[in-house]
Image (cartoon, rainbow, N blue to C red):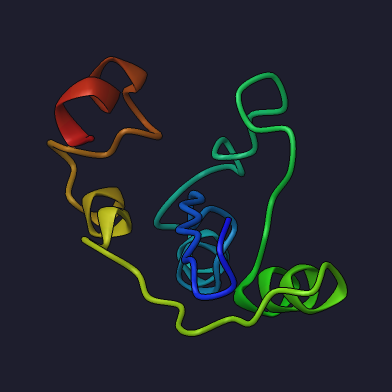
Length: 90
């Protein structure tokens, strides 16, 4: 990669504060987003920045795309309550 090259890293935003609040409020029933076989590691914005820094990369920006977690509070689209909905939600 050249000195001015760019790397884009995309990771799931699971285990975030919104999900933790939904769990605490009883709006979801478990931590089913923790999927060890499917996701080897989980990251926060802070941990991704730390990895970039430790490996010599500069973090230019971090952003989230569509907030898929909104589906968790709608009974007809909660992919955590009905795993069969996962393909349609994504």
